[in-house]
View 1 (cartoon, rainbow, N blue to C red):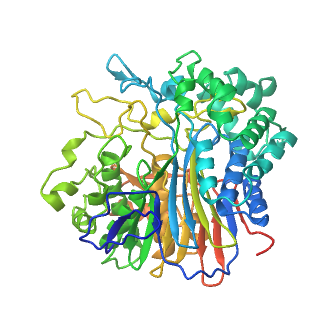
View 2 (cartoon, rainbow, N blue to C red):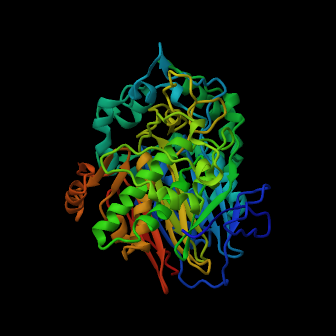
Length: 582
């Protein structure tokens, strides 16, 4: 990595060199160069065929990539409710090719006003994840619907109501339950309250039995909610009957939470800075905290230094493992809500710090510790600001990537946190359990955790929607994934896979997932050459955990010289499609 800028623009571009500091005034956009021509058509890839069809329908109507993204996600909330929906939140990175502007629309859930730092503690002992996950305390204010409006107002071409038409049709007429959704239900009956809460039991377990694949499922409540949002705007969701239903479901006993209708009405989406860092002759542009997009820049920058002397592919894989271990240690220690805490992001992503950090290569069997960019760059310690992180993050999330006919692009990752969120239901959709994305345990020694629970705070997220641009500022790649804490590893794999290992989009997605967070390195051995990778890393001294599968849901688009190369993760049920006009 040669240099990094945290870019902020109003209507013009600020540039910066390695020694320059970013401007203090900021909005959400960052600009890259473009020559104005685009002849590669459009493409959409997402985790369910119905969602992809909705996106393509919008593109064929002349819609912007954002119109297609909203339509696709509204459908995903219906057909893939275990992963995301109206009761959750998300991050959307948008590229406007004309003018080269990037905008990060953040719709992260927010802690209720009644939340407390120790709400998941009892007599000095942290509540176990199951109890916290299924409690009303875990429900934050949903941000997805406000995210829709924020993005549509700035970028949308089609009328607001049109983007909800595919989801309303499916909810009204019914859709066939997919194998993945059906496979979840018996397990969730044992591990959650999904089969016990009256509303979710009636929907997912009619007659006391889990839905089977192929069952025609209708959701008139969901259709009604979307019709109200389409007609009345997002006020229909954040105030009135729907907001009251959300608050009531969150407060319901046992183990009710504090979320109120007033908390919901106060929600505001945020446009945050886009962060970009150079990887060789390319630029990785991604979402800033509370996202973990910065981890993509860190992984790529560290990998560049660590792989410099790699003699073969096995050495490159080992360098990728070490880059992850170092980046995760820093991300876990420093990242949180930027409106609430001071994150030394510029220092963490600074090329001189990454160069130094790469020399701190930790022994394969050791537990990685966070670095201290303050000491490296300013002789002023930063690490002592925070204690060790205690956050656990589940993998109930989805990702979609879209490019429209004009070359505009969306990378969107959305979530309800764990599978099926909190298992609580309101107005046709599931509510998130996003408050468990905070550090649930309060350190006994009184030290602070960067990702601690605070009223009005947004929890740290691993979601990392990202785009890569070439040296001329032309779009090269749109990428992202679900997967909880493993997201930086999954997305990082596609970046180095395509840009350094010479893989096609599908080859990069199909390649075994390798997750190196903490002292353990997980390797997906069910995918070739996973076993060979695991064996080699063991020989090098790493603590390797062999996994039969990983919960990635990578959906990426790579821009070639003459065409688009898309990929859908075979670990889920997605596909890639192009408009008929391509």
